[in-house]
Image 1 (tube, rainbow, N blue to C red):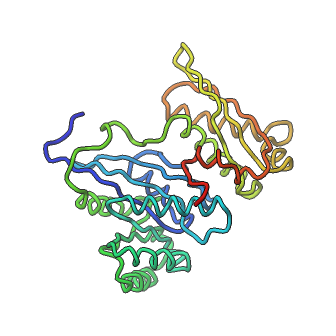
Image 2 (spheres, one colour; image 1 turned 90 degrees about the vertical axis):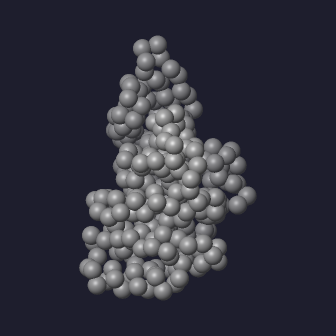
Image 3 (spheres, helix red, strand yellow; image 1 turned 180 degrees about the vertical axis):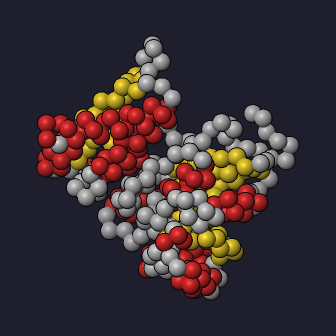
Length: 301
């Protein structure tokens, strides 16, 4: 590894309420897609690492599930994973949606952060959607909590303010050797990456039709002699009616879903992908300990 003499490396956890743009910001910071994005809340279910090099520093960003008041077992496991990622990180970055303001979920997060007695960087996201006076009022109110060392105004989607945020985070990375090869952008295995991309397409195409309880697993991965790969995946839903929605009339929906996922996977893996999708009904899959292990979540959280 071509490591500079004065190398630095550290972990930065990106935390926040659901759907504030954490995955969008992670992808922007890393410079490529490592975490799926959809308008559906709680898209990120487990910890995702995005790795980038800025000058002599290697920063490992932890994209955590959104933090909210959990109601189900899966919710509790995801919230526990988020706080676990924050606890293990060298620095914490709280991302807030400017259009939602200093709402209840964010207040609960700030209260928890205050108890840790750690200084946190605040990034107010989606500033292009909110008038400046409202932004300044929000920043002043959040600064008064005493939790934040620095406050940045950004748009993760448009990119404005992100360079200044990156420079700040880079400056605070501790000295030490790089922890990952310089060409690695994530720690996510190919099988899991493939499942996540298909799940993203599932949410994007069926956002209003499909309930939250759907999962995708890569059950088969076969390397082909011509350099391509055969991937077999199962989409798990909880009821037969949901299976019919995913399949669509005459199988049109799942065909479109497979095509969208395959095209993106070929771009990510830089080779031809043969993708085969199957839909199975598994009632209450959210109470199956094996599913939690696959996601890297604690079933008993």
